[in-house]
Length: 353
Image (cartoon, rainbow, N blue to C red; front, side, top):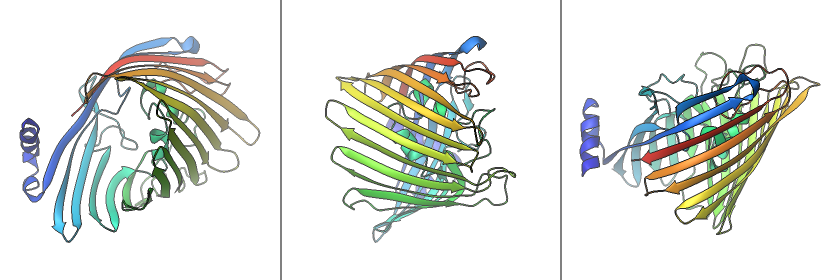
């Protein structure tokens, strides 16, 4: 009852929208932590940070029954920077868009789902689903994949996580464990790095889940080639432990390539769970120069209820010379130079509603 009243009050600004829906839901996540990141001889930074276990967000979603097995739906969701009470998060939006995490409208039925708007790219999903730490905090394997100023060929790619101006199709359920999606996103004459095409197909049945994805972003910079990405991820639930693994390749031509793999595990113990992962990135900086970064992560989560979780994570990133990957973007700046080690730890709480 309380949630329904809150949703109704929040949606009064959308004149006529709520009354046109069969159902409307207000939802969100608030996640804050105390974090420390040390980047070699550059020192350390202590901070109150967001999104250590899950991405903070506020959103609205609704579905209308059109009859004949057809439904229409919408989903609008924006990131939150709770430490400063500001909007934040999202890829390609600079943390300034109102609904930077997702803003879509859909038609659904026995044929599957057609979805339009700003949405996650198919090549992103394996990153977060097959990592014990998802894509958040000091433990995320994307810490050694995300762009780094002196070595990244991906700086202008707006499609690493989400794509604007996209049209997507999702397979319907009931296909014996098969699932999949395809996406096309228009560049619309914007800066390079917005035009994208990709797909993801997988199989999930019983304890096993495996998926393959491929995507291409055209001309991420005027003097660079198209960026292609493909990845393969999987998990297997042994009952007492779930094993995970993933492999990624980002290719931008003969002189710019990144290969990353991860092995991880989650071990449930009552209301808590121990987590661990080990990841390696091999980065081609030129036709003749290749460097490596590794990341080792340990963590523990404790569910105080269905909606509230306490967590702690520790991460150690080791860079070869020329790489500047860190355990979190919240640490002090560090020039590439010789290799260095970055460490990060965080203690936080996540609440969902």
